[in-house]
Length: 304
Image 1: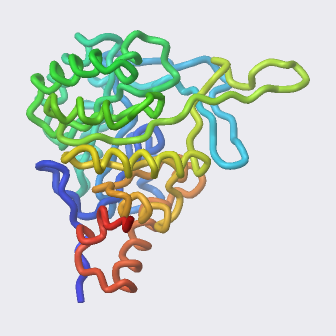
Image 2: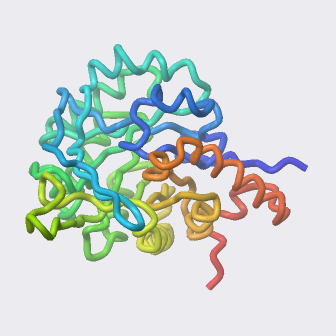
């Protein structure tokens, strides 16, 4: 008996629901020596901006007992270099390419969406309004409802490609923000981004992170992410992509049962470059053992 892993995110059809999370998978090349990229449901590349970014000053990463604090600051090569130097390599693979993008202001968001819309080989856009490691005004888009509404509306008008909005957990009620995205035409929401955190060197009494605070990711935030995915998937009709501390297939299955249509692997890639495909295989094994023919029968199957 075959077991279908295919899922649909608006017009984006994925062969399986396992995606690599932005910021943890580079532009794919780095991981291609470890895994067959053809087997991933989709690859989300490192966040891109109009111009290259140097990112935040070091130290930028600190390992915690159950995760990682980072303050990379969205270092990237810029959209033009990505299209010329990285995208041709990614086009060789039979998987979907999602580009995470941001701007320093709304005009740059709209310009980025327009440029990405006109670029072949990009299957969907992930609009980042939730990085906790940037001090730019755009970060408020993920925290203030009316700013988010205006931003999603204008970006939506600039692209016909599937638009995913990556939400911040730093809000009172994340379902309100998700519903705004749905109302303004987003095709999906992804959640959660990292949670602001801090670590102090007790000798120097200074922060170990160069920007004082960073974003906490990894297994420590997983229960928070599962809860938010559960709440959002019940509040909106558009698909939810769940992420936050997924290391194993069992972790991923929690998100799917909670209502996520797809899931993304982030910090786990740094520990185990095979994590993405191991999660795919683990989900297949679970479907076989539970005699579930179609993964869509599992999605949102949480029992009250």
